[in-house]
Image 1 (cartoon, rainbow, N blue to C red):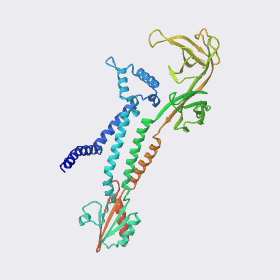
Image 2: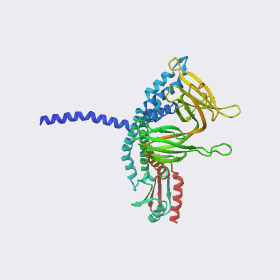
Image 3: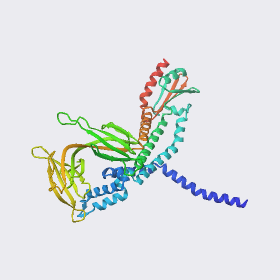
Image 4: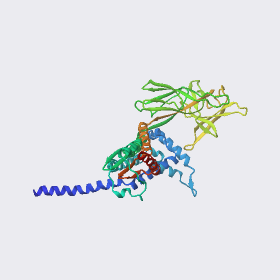
Length: 474
């Protein structure tokens, strides 16, 4: 017996700290102040995500793309300095370590969203019993002081009213009526206050969808010329999709403006076609959990390159997706060599299209380049190999590339459900507020009191009810 008593005492001492800790955590998660702190932290993170350049989701999942993006951002901030001290590279490194260059997919942002979801769920669970009691509780009988004319929204009749007549008036105004001991009570939209739970559920689902999309979503941009293909995810990904631009078209009007633009795409998986569609800006292709959107387009230059022996080493479009001095430019590494080819589309003083070719090779200094040749071609012209580094370059024609945005958003359905819940909850809360009215029937007179939510024009509605009650009294 003594041993059992000691065991019970030890268990009680052990459970008391755990119970105290659980109560403290519960109070913290139900604290409005703590919720405000969480929302401020998420808002500050979102500001960084808006102001700082953000990496695409594909770069976060691909180390090589990530390194390229970091190098690009370093170049953007290279000239930033304070009092002559360069701080750009240090800032970029700090932003990278903190995850501020991909805020919406970094682990701590997902943790903040998850914590806010947990707080909202616990706050709702803590508030729901009290809310249910306040909605469910109906007090038909009220004391004399409740009808004091010095209180707001009170009225009195010096005429006799019948309970049946009052009942009929309140039902015409869509009240649910109850009677007890000379009291007629009307309740309208009694349970609609619970619609706030729908709003809370929608907010939880919305945040949950954001966390899921940030953690598991995917987005990339493919820039393809006619006939070109590219993988959606990094090479080697199981079940990877391959997208082919069969043909791009952008017809123009007489004034030169574009009527529309679209791309005929085929999607391959494991070497076989699984989908094909001509996609427009507002008409994407959904396949295997991905959605392919038509996003942009630009010029391309179709060229052929032969080496010194006449062997074809390249044929196809060079995508002029960049700009150089305001002119479309693209880059190509000539296959089988270390020679780079910078291509710039320009026009002669007479308006004739002209393609400028700049051959680039590694310079003597680290990370430097040097120009091997510089040559301009007209459409249909072929270069002299003695001028263009031993290669024969022919410019066939100007074409176009298509820019496709490819997304996978696992939280999209949750967003739509959250939207419907939030909108539905707000509509029910603000457009169908609860109204309650008490009519106490006394010999030769009647007393009226009305209560409603604060955004109801109670005096106006009470005046309308009074008119109908007076009419019922004759």
